[in-house]
Length: 436
Image 1 (tube, rainbow, N blue to C red):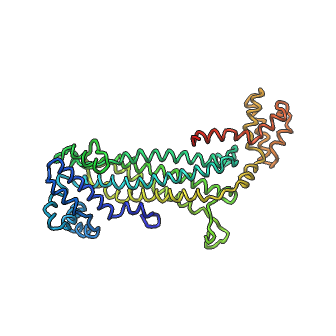
Image 2 (tube, rainbow, N blue to C red):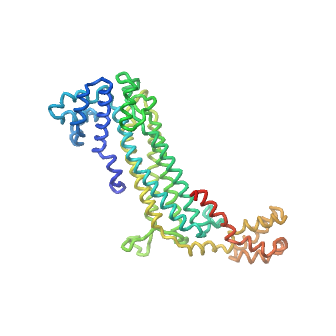
Image 3 (cartoon, one colour):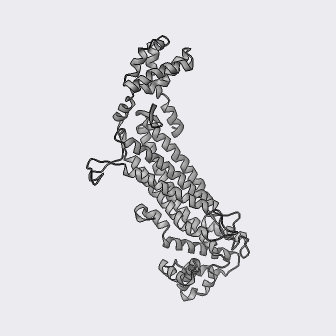
């Protein structure tokens, strides 16, 4: 991923230095487990632990250009750097293992580090949404369906809905993260031809991983497909939030907008512009992350016990997907935290259709008084169409309609147009969402 979208902590997870350190961590855990089981000398495992160091990435690249194999280049670089007294122990490095034993198990360690950062990002976003939802719990605004005014809601309910979705995404990430927290040491075709399953269990326990119940040469890629798809779902939720803010920032709406810095510029040509650039960026990056999910799904099907077609793809999509989501979570949290909200504009827009948002309440009042639904609907719609076409006041039209006033008393009509009645269950919804 390009530096523009890479935050330092997540970038370090996928650095060559960290990758090689994880490879060595797996190799040393394997040597120690083998020594415990008497398959290699304990002194050899001890010397490797004491003296082996992650090699310089440049040296591994140099050796790989010769041997055309990254894990072999890695083991060569580790052994050549051992001090003389530990060189004999070097022959037990990678003992009984195949490359994917190291690659897939180390990948699980990198993903665990990435997931800790992603969890923190989701927690921060959830906290920001919760805070601002309570801030605007009772701030009325118009709800829109099909982009058209529907019925009243509150801005706090909109934020609470986003919070609830982020909470579901936290649960999704937890499940997906656990699904990829697995290692394997089952050898070239998964049969444990050279190491027993008990040794795999020992190695994985040392690394804080679960052993895959069964594997071929690789951990099966349905796990990673589920994982990256989960990241794509989370990105889509962030896009949903950002898209709504873009709509609310439109000049004709302007109920909320991104913070705009004192020195910020919105356009190279038009000095008046204040554009929703962060929200637009989030929407664009979500498209990219969803494309990575497609690639992960394509990686599930491999030839027989393994081919290498998935490898090149994963070198790109796993770092990029986690880095992108980390960046998007940070940007979305900042967007919500600093969002400018305009309650007066929300009120003005709520009143823009001159009472039409209360049409259903009026319809139900008529039905309760014995009017057939289709007849009541026709009466209310007739008045509503006059509002649309002639910009007249809906309530005044209703009061002038003898069919309606013949069935409803003035206080019943007033109650149908009562905003407080429409929003009387906001506290109950908040209790459901926030459990407080």
